[in-house]
Length: 266
Ligand SMILES: [Fe+2]
Image (tube, rainbow, N blue to C red; front, side):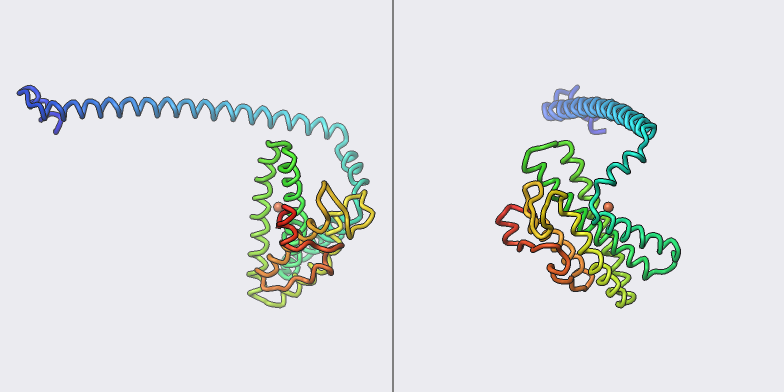
C-alpha cells in the first residue's frame, strides 16, 4: 500500500515520495540479493555435508573391511597375545573386580545393594580412578609434545564423555545412599578393597618399584595424586570420607601445590 501510494506521488513529482520509493526499491533489491546468497550458502552447505557424509561412509566401509580381515586373521589369537603382556593388576581389576560383580548381578538382577557395588566398581573406580587419570595423562603428553592433533581432538571428546558416565554413577550412588545410608558402607568397602589393587595399573612394566617411578616423563606422585583427588572429590559428593592416600595408592601423592608448580593436572 505504501509503495503504491508512493508510486502515484512519484508520478506527481513529489521528491520525498521519490526518496521513499528509491529506499523501498533498494531495500527490496537488498532482500532479494540476501535471499539469493543464503540459498547459495545453504546449497554449498548441503553439498559439503553430502561430501563429508560420503567420506564418512567410505571410512566406515574401510574400517569394516579391516575388521573383517582381522577376524579372518584370528582376532582372538591377537587379543590373547596382548593379554599375555598385561600385568596382574589388570586381572585383579577387570576379572576379579568387574567380571566378578557383573556375574553376581546377573545371578541376582533385583539386588539393588549389589548394583550399588557394581556402579562403584565401574563408575567410581574403573572410570573415575583409572580411565580419567590415564586419559588426562595421555592427552597431556600429546599436548606437551605437540603430537597427533587429530587424536587430541577426538580423545578430548572421549574424556568429556567419560565425565558424563561418571556423573551418572555418582548421581545414582547419591540417590541410592539417600534412600538407605547403609549403602555408603558398600561404596566405602568396595573402594577400600579395589582401589589399592587397581592403582597398580598405573605402574609400567619397566618400573622397579610401584612406590616411585616415572611414566611418560611424569612422576608417579603426580599420577597417584590426580587419581586420588578425583576419587576423594566424588566421595565427598556422596557424603563419604575417602580413606587416606597411603591406604589407597601404592606410593606417595603430590600435593595440589606441587602438582600446580610442576604444571601437572590437579
Ligand atoms: Fe565410560
